[in-house]
Structure formats: structure tokens, C-alpha cells
Image (spheres, chains in turn brown, cyan):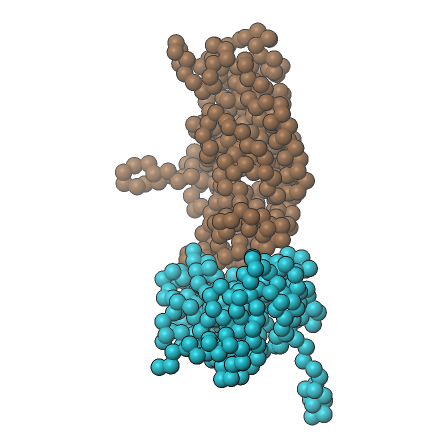
Length: 328
Length: 269
């Protein structure tokens, strides 16, 4: 899709995400300045009127920012916050969206990825949501983005210190699978009582012969809190370690947020005789030929033949563009 | 060490492992337990008997740090020889004690086991909590303890719910003993088991207690269990300890009317 296209509808103040009766088309419109008070100078952006900047009201955003400050001060600690209803269901990224809304400024450039791709339903609708309610520029190119909201992946392109990653987290509590009680898990975090975390890894080895946990792989942040890095594949865990970018995690249903500040030690849990290892593939990407990136397996016909392609579409695209340029 | 030195060592007074003074928690008049004091020495088995509602389980949860008392103290001499006051220690210390030097065998093994993970993981959990990060060692400990409690080591990867009641209870005991504790609390460990399984479990327990030199506080309403395991008995009734003494003494020559009633109401086959 076209990277810098901003979608909006001609009728102002209609319901976000709703269909207008006349045209179902979204097209670029040029409204007068009064209708887009937060539009940034760079792009031709028009946003919905009748909504506060980035949908949430200012008090809510301040509350979330206070929570974020605490989360950054105590890396990996889950800070409760007063989660708001967002105009989409829980599980679709409400936690991440509230964090994004709280940190977004008028001159930010937003990228949203879902399963590594910029063109999946969730990514497209969240990107459009912020383009319309905040009027910010959006992009699919990782190096151009200042705020990246994601569910499953950390981009393959290395992040920089002026970028912020926002993760959508389904279950923020890494101890939940073994300890259903919230008061108990909080005490366990407070007392650094993390022995049970290894019980799960033990079970994996006992059952499969290796640590089979492949996503939401628990990590220790700054040698203190054990944290669930949201459903990113363990392939991406090493990218959390000493990352120059700020990482923010938001769980909308559970109303928790937590953070990994830049240049923080993040260590994946493991056993001495079964060390942590990331996934690897014998194949390379069918489009760009990358052997370093995380690959998705695609079944391409009824005979079950498969191909592997990069899960990070932007990375794949960049490599192909570079190849074409090289060919010319 | 010369014989004289040995004698010297032997003559030194043994310090109590566990001291309880005036322990009281009342839910209402005569409900709960009050004014309980005793000393427990290393390797000693103390039985607490009494009817339902006499405060046995309340006493046990006070002793094991599960709920704070209205008044009274519980102190424990840890492996460094320092005396720890249970309820003025921090929660972190209390938890560390509970998963290292202490064990708690629940009446219902489902409360004491993690039913969702395999037998091996159940046994290894305490070790992992203590920082053992070597899968091979955990595995070896699991196999060793399964055979010590007479469970087929081949079943190490089976879930506890596929085990029979007696096996679950033995697994729970293994899970507690793996950290080589010095003090074990047991709440009716043979409750809900049939007689022959009870007998085997008691036999196993008696062997392990002697072999590992464990101090045990065991709550039971079954006098046969008390006679088999306990060195000393405390008889409780309506929140008070009505009689305390050596097991044989109490069972053969009960002094308090209630103890007499208790002993006489055991069916003689």
C-alpha cells in the first residue's frame, strides 16, 4: 500500500470506523485549519473534528503518562492504570492504543504492525484511527517512524534511540499460568519469588526434549522483575536486550502497563544445560532471500508445498527495493 | 574426636528447634486455640489429637506461619543456629523458611501439589525456587525421590491427577522432602485413604522421619496414627490443650477425662 497516504472521510464528526451512508470511500480531503487543529506541518493531514487529540481526553492521557513514568522508573514492574473503553474490542490492541494515544505528539510519525505486517486488518485500522483522531503522519517504513505500535514483532531493522515501541499485551502476568491468584502473584513479584517460572520450562523439556515455548518467552528485566514480553516470538527476545529504543507495554483488558527503558539488560530465562536459543530456518525468504529474519511458513497448494517469507513486510520490501536499485 | 569430647558434646543441653509460647487465636469464646506452649526438639515427632473443631488445624496454621496469632510467639532455630521469631520476621524470610527448611503436607494432596504439571516438576519446584538451574540435576532429584517414596520412576512425566490418592500423598511428601527440610507439618496425612494404603504410607513416613532425623508436627484425629508416629502427644479440646505428654503415657494411662473418653472410644477389633 501507499506509505504516506492518509485516509479520512469527508463528513466531519461521524463515528470512527463507521460507514457513511453515501460513499464508503475513504479519500484524502483538504479541510480548513479550523477542522484540523492538530495537523502537523509536514503532511496534508485531515482529522475528525469532535474528538480530542488522539481520541482520549487530556486527564486520561495524563493518568497514563504518570503510570508510564512509574513503569520506566521500575523496569518490568506492572503498573495498574485506569484503562478506558476504546472503540474496538478487548484483545484487538486497546492497551497499546491507550499508550500510543498518551505519548503521541502532533509531529510524531506512527507505524503499526500486526504479525510483522503493515497491511493486516488490525494494523490498518489502528493506523487509520490515529491518522483520523490525531492527524499524525503514518508510515510503514521502520526508520521513519517515531512511534511503532506492535502486537507480535519487533522490526528487523534495528531501532534507534528516538523511537518508542508500544506493545499490545494480552496477558501481562508471566506467573499467571501457574498461579491464578492476583494477590499471590503480586507477592511473588514483590519478594522476587520466581522459582515457579522454571517449572514451565522444565515441563517443556520433560515433554518435548527442548524448551518449546516459542512466544511470550519470559525474561528477567534489569536483574529484578520477571516480565512477559507480550506475544513476540522468542526470536525477538534478544532485540529487547540493551535496545536503544524505549519499550512500552500496555494490556487493556487487564489494565496494566510496564516498560523496558533504553539500554536495559533483558535476559531470557533458561537452564544451564538447556540454554536459551532462538528459532532458525533452513530456508530463506522466497521474496527477498533473507536468512536473518523471522520467517512465516505459507502453504501454497493442496499438495502441502510450502514457502517461507519474511514476517516483517517492511524489511522484506526494503531489501527488495535495494536489490532492484542495485540491478539498475 | 576423643570419647571424652563425645561425652562432652552429648551432655550439652540440646536446644529446642521450635518454641511456642502462649499461642492464641480465637474466632469466638472457646473457638480456635489459646494458651498453647511447647518446645519441639530436632528429630522429635509431636502429635496433636482432638475432636473436630477443637482447634487442631488452627494451631497448625499458626505454627506454620499461615495466619498471625492474636498473641503469643513462635520461634524457630534455623540451620545457622539463630532464633527466628516467625511473626516478627519479614514475609520474605517466612516464605524462604517455608520452602527450604520447612515442609507442609496437606490433608488433601490436591492442595499441596500443582496438579497441572508433571510429578517431576512438582518435585523439582522447591529446588528451582532455591536457584537450581540445571535440568539434569532436577531430573535426577525427581527420579531419586520418586523411588524413595515408592513410586515407579518411569512415571516422572505423568500428571499427578493420573495418580491414585495414596500415590498423590506420597508425591506430596517427596515434593516437601526434596529440599531436605528440618521440620515438617502434617495435617491428617492419611485422611481419606483406605486402611491398607494408610498402613503403607505410615510405614514410609516412619522410615523417612527416622532416616532424615525430621522434626514433625502432625495433626490427626486417628489415635492409631498418633501411636505409630508420634513421640509426644497433645490432646486438644475446645481450644485448650487439656493434656500433653509421651504418647504411650497418654494412650495407656490418660489422666484428663476427655483423654480417657478419646482413648476408650477407639474401636478394638
